[in-house]
Length: 115
Image 1 (tube, one colour):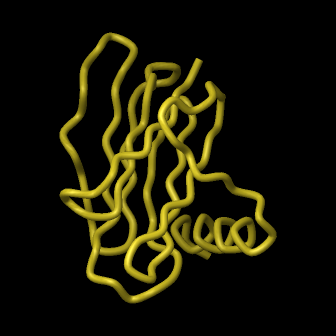
Image 2 (image 1 turned 60 degrees about the vertical axis):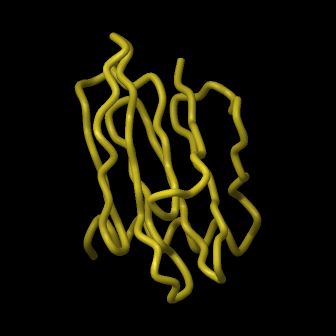
């Protein structure tokens, strides 16, 4: 099973049992954090830990892409990255300060903060 499928299966399972929360600014600091985003009949999931941030469309057939961006502890913001269903970006261990997730180019930004 690919990483994308494993993440998708875990996210769908968590969504079905209500294990994920919808983040709003400011979100709680964490070592690992998740967000569920809904738009136009689609469900997206975003997540991050101290090295990786990802966004994935987990349900629906809307036209939006999975968008992700990160901020490092030194203040650097990565450019927004996106793909049709899943996008992941990485940084060095312990460098991730904030991950940002959205469901389309002009969409609401959901932030996850790290310690």
